[in-house]
Image (cartoon, rainbow, N blue to C red; front, side):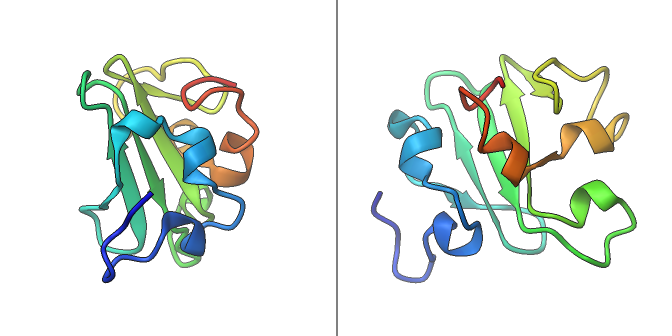
Length: 114
């Protein structure tokens, strides 16, 4: 994966992540997250309902699910929860389930399911 010089590789920030193993190759290079902080996002070029966002944990965040490095997975337009099923409503409705610890997500068989 070729990244611009000003943007370190995602694996530099997220130990254990080898984006060539987990992220579909045809999704191309990641983009920096829009939110404040360190993180990356990948988007399926053929289906805008598919995407992965990886965020660096914030130890001062009030939600424990966001204090650790975590992943938000969108598959077919739905946010996928920790168990691999779509969550009910939006990320705001179920933030704990929607923010999957990266250490757990790295164990998933596919980018979108355990």
